[in-house]
Length: 127
View (cartoon, rainbow, N blue to C red):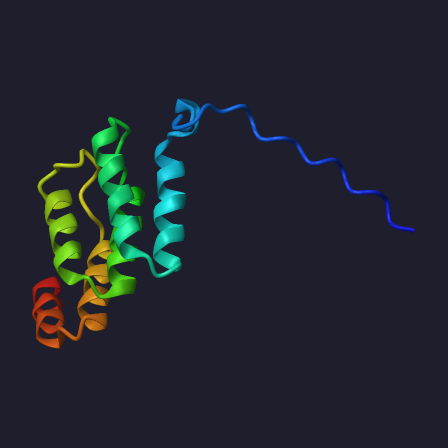
């Protein structure tokens, strides 16, 4: 005989229109949501969340930037990937300088977007 399931916990009380508690608003939470949207094929929402993170006052880490670049690469959104990587290179996010992996994500966005010449040009610069 199977043991009974534990009772469901009711959700915390919330008033209509109340935002998530501040304790849940962390860079890591944003990263999880950005990645989830990207994997679900919803790059617009992923990039909107990245914009919210940038405006939130929370740190925009290299990993958070990479999540946004992954969303761009999955959708072939090379223009957005160029913009994000360019801002990261100039230190506008306050995160460390992008790594080779970040440039590979830009290459992926070119490939998915059918921008073979742009990908080849980037590869020649990366050598």
